[in-house]
Image (tube, rainbow, N blue to C red; front, side, top):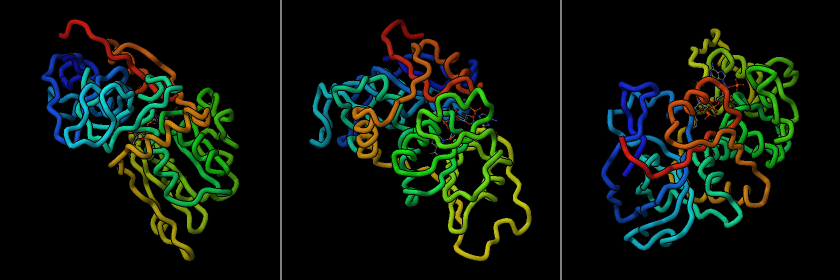
Length: 306
Ligand SMILES: NC(=O)c1ccc[n+]([C@@H]2O[C@H](COP(=O)([O-])OP(=O)(O)OC[C@H]3O[C@@H](n4cnc5c(N)ncnc54)[C@H](OP(=O)(O)O)[C@@H]3O)[C@@H](O)[C@H]2O)c1
């Protein structure tokens, strides 16, 4: 079958190649993958993985083999999936990491959700956000656009931070109450920060935290170091916290929640670029160049493998 595999010697370190069919564990189903989506971390760091690795985590398609242990959806079910080795014509994936796609949701839209949507959902659940001020950095990106919508759904006052005025487009419509460039103009403390950018902006966001507030450090798109002044992490009063995020285990139930929101028209999948996986190198570059407002979804096609 065809798959996008790591090749450190090609631009972007990804190319279409021929690989063996997956061999599922008893707890895994096999998915005929129709669409995949790209995430910044995957494309930025593809070259760090061993050559020949089938890359990617987000997929949507149709079950062609049910799990041997009897769990999960049956053959023919349309599902979204989160799991390693997703960028292939077929993937073996744990039944706990898939969710059925409602009839009214496009499979390509479903493929956009797993990594970015689950990250936004789970970091927002780190504390109660109803009536709280939530700052989302990198708000124009994949995680950011879902986080803005979900934070608004959860009743937060949403402050979306972007890198330039052009990148502010559409965020108010998605539910942002304020859209700021960098952290300019935030005049009151915030209760929760979802930080996708890292670097100096992370250190500055820490200073904006209200007593008892927390930062969820999701990503570090800036690639710049963050410097914290001596004692800037010391605070008298309810503790301020900074937490890592990387918990994407058993994604299925949360994926189902996201799909229900999409089906109900409460969450927009925000697919900004749709293309063939034949053009993965160009598509990945647009993401790295900050020219994608939301998600890149690629269609998986048969064809002559390289
Ligand atoms: N911890 C986890 O489990 C997890 C899960 C998913 C993603 N992540 C990480 O979270 C971050 C966001 O992911 P994503 O998929 O939403 O990425 P994305 O779609 O590329 O969005 C990244 C955003 O970061 C902003 N940014 C600010 N400074 C930047 C710089 N110097 N270079 C590039 N972008 C910059 C961009 O803002 P403008 O558009 O306004 O320019 C862009 O919208 C990434 O670092 C990713 O690796 C972590």
